Image (cartoon, rainbow, N blue to C red; front, side, top):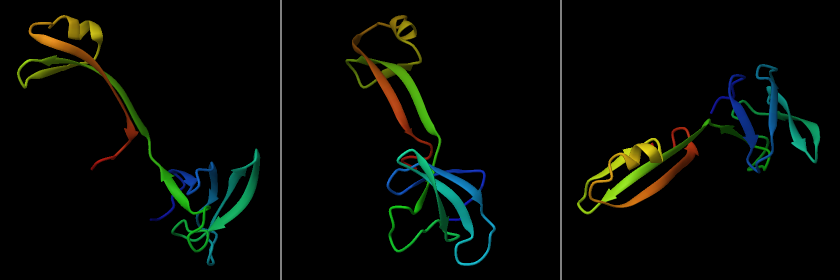
Length: 112
């Protein structure tokens, strides 16, 4: 993994991170800060985002979240229909045995 200024990161332990530079040079060319107990603390990382040998401060990319809500008309047969709103699902009630709300909340790329 190469750390980039145009991506967002957090630490392996879930702390918020700010990256200031990715080209400082030396063994720890990535400079930034970690939010610890409400204060920003300076940290430097290797070009891979590693802070040390399996450290809680290692960087992990934060990917955009996908959040969607759908309504599914479940029918007696194997056919079900997906709708963006409950109102849209209610316009096709034929043979439905349930109308289920499905909420998707995942990171971009999950499951690929």
